[in-house]
Image (cartoon, rainbow, N blue to C red; front, side):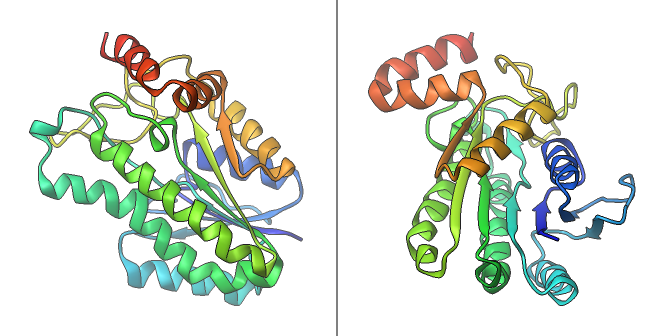
Length: 250
């Protein structure tokens, strides 16, 4: 039985990926801060874990490795966003975005490196359109996702020698937390903003990501908006920035 570990796996896109992998016969381990609302099954294991606590993250990864011996797929899905102008973004909030979106993923990759190599498996980073292009009022979020992509695209070259694939998926807008309100610091779970375009369901996004995973695609733009953004930003970045500002800034 193949084994997957999904951070941020207890809701939204992470849970949709877990459901889809379970339907394929995989066992999935879900790492998230709050997991009590998710029902464990014979193929679903839950670990409550603050991913920004490196000791807790290391212990969670050790628990998976001791139980399974190998990891066929590590999915780096946990994330938060900050919505608002940079002039009102304080240093602590900026660092919090990076701690969850970037450093937690890097820490998890470090702890699972050997187990993924043993399986000849795959690292799958869940980025965003904001990981390869600008996004209005998301400077911290975009910066963290650019860093995430830079890390995993570089890791790909190192892990290829071990028979390991490294893939990056970049959804556009996924309706995972519709109606959620940002806190006073501007932090909110992704998928809650009211200024998104052409929202996908978590299930549709998960299906698109797994199709890209099956193809072995190094980069997986997820959804119509993401595919258009990928090509337009690469071909004409100034045009893309104007289009983004017109549609997101309003």
